[in-house]
Length: 123
Image 1: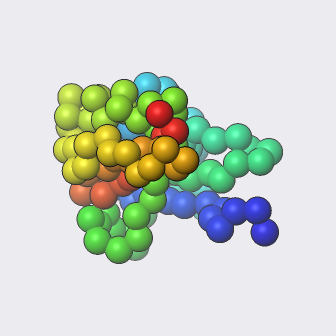
Image 2: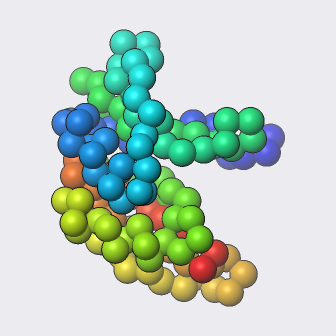
């Protein structure tokens, strides 16, 4: 087993609003598709060796600031992602914070749907 996680889903009540938010903070266009009757917006990942995830809208999925927390790859410097959060309608929950020199930095935000999501980067 290479990764503890194979796939994750971030729930959205308003799918279009959530996709717009993640497009803005990640500075990309998420690929949208319907999978098993649910709209999915795929977060960027390497399909051959990476762990993937998506923004998903389904009646049984509810956004939450409690419970499991997912940490997204913040790229070269997660500060750039956090800088776009407020303008996209979210809230910064934890500013860029050094974990230690070997691990790098973490930060967190609350998205437009109410999910508490972490970020990690080396710088």
